[in-house]
Length: 269
Image 1 (cartoon, one colour):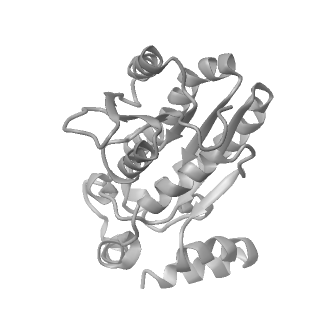
Image 2: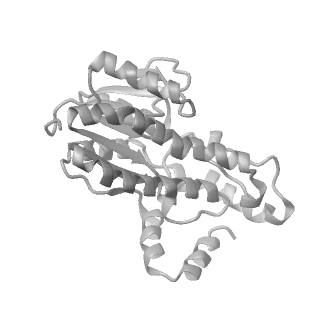
């Protein structure tokens, strides 16, 4: 593996906006060679290269990885950041909408992993960081499928870490809380909200849109990514969250299940 503080070749999915853009710009500023991906790359990136990748298309993923290797001959780290959000009462969301979410948030990351592992095994080194979410630890009302997809990615990451360790490849998950990004603008939504759920759903969306949920700087996550890259023995899970969000992870582990759910629902009344 590269020595700590030496420049690395890094592939970051979802590198055109939000946390992914912050990670790309920060790592590039620290001297790393960074490739960010987007379905439709446009505009000037801040010191890094944007390349085309559609996570739902295996050929597109393979082509993007091949482009990185053609330019840099190696891939030292992958940050699987790209993902979709979803909102709505569980009953109101169609199986097709849920499937689309899982195809991006879980299978998309898997497609990238499958594309980079042969090169990492050849190198005898590599790092894969899967960006999951604090929501992987508990079900969020009216964002249940999002929590489910991130929980699935957590278990995938845990298994992957054990399987590829013999090849010198490190794997970790990073769980951000809510950061100042545009993920809310692109969430999958139901065609309409059923009458029984309207009051709770509207309250949830009011909290998401008007609270401090999105006030924190995504550069916090970018700095944590570089810390993980520099660690020869990274932890299995990292948290990028503060206040009540971080406390909720601890309370989920300590409190009886129904009591924790009552606490959670108090936020939506």
